[in-house]
Length: 308
Image (cartoon, rainbow, N blue to C red):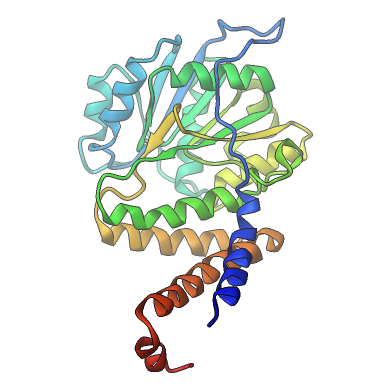
């Protein structure tokens, strides 16, 4: 393979990155006149067996400068110390009722938390996330500036070497939502990101909230589509400097399981205009890497390749 051909393949591989052209991040913003900056915030955290991650999130919430009205942890039949940890951190603990027919677990937990919330603004957070310093204020100000539904894909923190393998999955998730293309704010998102979602309580219940998406495997995508179809704006952000998480801290086994489940679930709702470039990008990356290895190692390796 010549350098020219490799350069051409590399160009083809890079083209799908136009789907991840620019990622907006929540910032401290001037709030429009008439917005209620003192609106009470209800943080809702669905949690099942999260004794290791929940203290990190609850600790980060305590360090926020913005006023939080209440923190609600919905204990979804945990078999560990999740409920005790939530209680020790001052959160309001709700024991989830048995799962009714027709509901999936996370939508049911979120719905129960929303029913008990007293705030005007609902902030749903996954238990494995962590708010950065000033992150809550950025989230709320960005929401008050735009309204509708705002969601954030957390910044991916990687501590172990194997976790870097999950970076590919992280990129695919961000790309597949269609929110960060070269079209910028004109791009129409496929749905919302689930780890961090904020909306008004009135909009949430008027549209049916998680009850309206109770059968959806990807309830975050479905919730975003629900708001979008009702004519309310959907805003997706990256979480750098605002909110972060480790995708698979439990080991490489959890990475493989999570990657398989995520890809299978994502295929059910994928937009082919986005899915095809993603596939080309992944396959192209392997092809380019392989042929670059051939060029570096020389003719002996090339002769050993069965398709050359």
